[in-house]
Image (tube, rainbow, N blue to C red; front, side):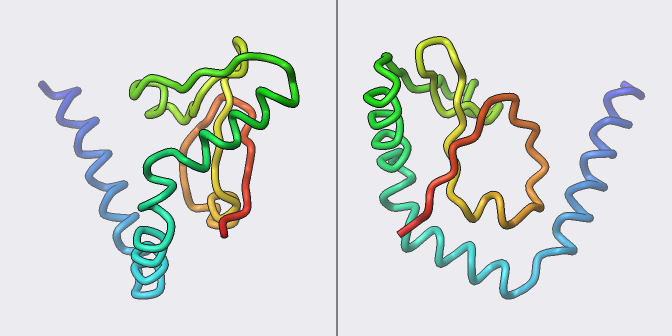
Length: 110
């Protein structure tokens, strides 16, 4: 119980620190992204189109990740190579603390 409590409390501290960084501009950008892009991209349309193009270019099959794999940052696979597909804003934000163990393909949002 003690170990679990310590680990959870560490996460609470990290969450507290992360929320202190949130300002009105961040909220505005998040809402803008949600309203303008996520309605389309949230359905995976951009990622699907990119996987189709990569599959065509490399002459290999692709398949989408499972929800568990997506939690680790993998969007899908080209043959047996895991690939993560992220918008260019993901790279520019630089605050995200994910440790993605796959090549990342960045795309420019419209």
